[in-house]
Image (cartoon, rainbow, N blue to C red; front, top):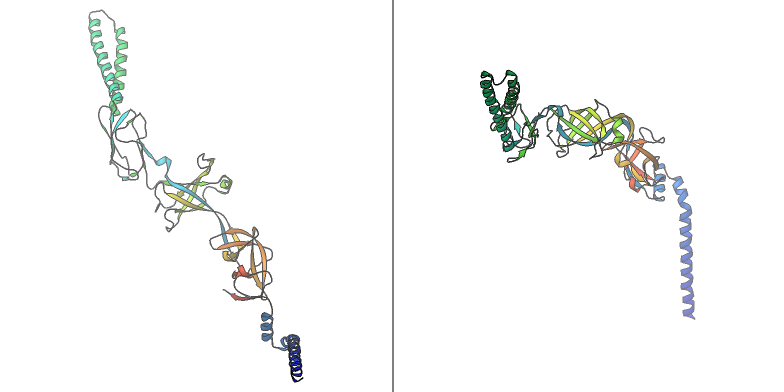
Length: 372
């Protein structure tokens, strides 16, 4: 009997404890709102933060207006001005004896460039002209003797004299062109060896381009642009030029001289010729990056890190009354660090989130730290 009474007492105590615990829990749940309402402003904000969704710490910067340039980036190569290239050739078939310069070498006036000899066929032609002249002169002597003996007339002398005159002119032409012996070709002015079309031992036809010299201060940059961009370019536009293989070098300014109206069949691009204001740092055949400013204006700018991809578009977050506000925006012009924002919702001075924005959703509570 004593054991049964003890067991019942234990069960009763346990039930009583459970009821008391439930009562205390319910009392606390009902008393919390009144506590928050009776607390001061700081305590109320803390109570709201503790009992709401997670809070994200973010950093913001104000949107501002700034100058934005639309730039067209192109690529090309450094070339000599075609009108200033000096071309060396000969007007007879020749045999190259020696080439004394290399491509890219700087030469001075009078420097020896190459030596050539007349080819065997050219020497044979020279001998034929010499023999023809000797034959015509011999015939003239014989004809003079016949005229003295009245066996011929002066009229018979006319064709012979024509043959002599023609042979003399041909022989004089050969001599003026240096066909009689080895010819030395020397630089007429200072320049850079741009092209060599001769190799020792080669037999080259008359008129072959043996060698070309380019003037160091007469160069141009040939840039290639897409056909759709041609109408946005015009003579006199400013271009920033920089060698691709020397990215740390300073940009060189240039001016568009010519916008061609023809598509290059090999590159499928339209050539734009740019005259550098200074030739410092530019080498012939060097690859060049050109940046052409095609428009400029004021725009609402946001840091690039504020822009988020959003289902094929872009969006950003601002902060309003402690909450994140999402804005779907359009992007206009871009630079390395700034982007033009196109939106009717945003204005200058709005705090845009640049750090912590990947964790945000629309309406989320935030703790904001503003950058100047």
